Length: 88
Ligand SMILES: [Zn+2]
Image (cartoon, rainbow, N blue to C red; front, side):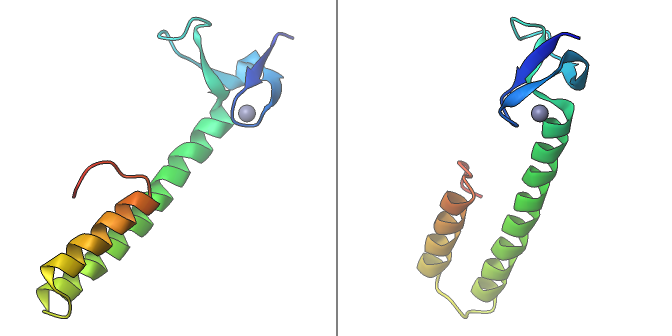
């Protein structure tokens, strides 16, 4: 069976485990479907965590516990920690 290098698991895996990607030279994704699922789940988990942390910061800000400057600093720090580029 033909095999392809999985960039996520760092090993050779059967081509059948890879999803098609017309934009890639090989016509396949750089990582297997399993890795794809893990990454999507990771992304949502991280996002969920980030959102709940952010909303608690905003809550403190609304209730006057922290200043706008403190709020901005905390949000910027969170974004950096979670690798978020946009200022939300
Ligand atoms: Zn893999």
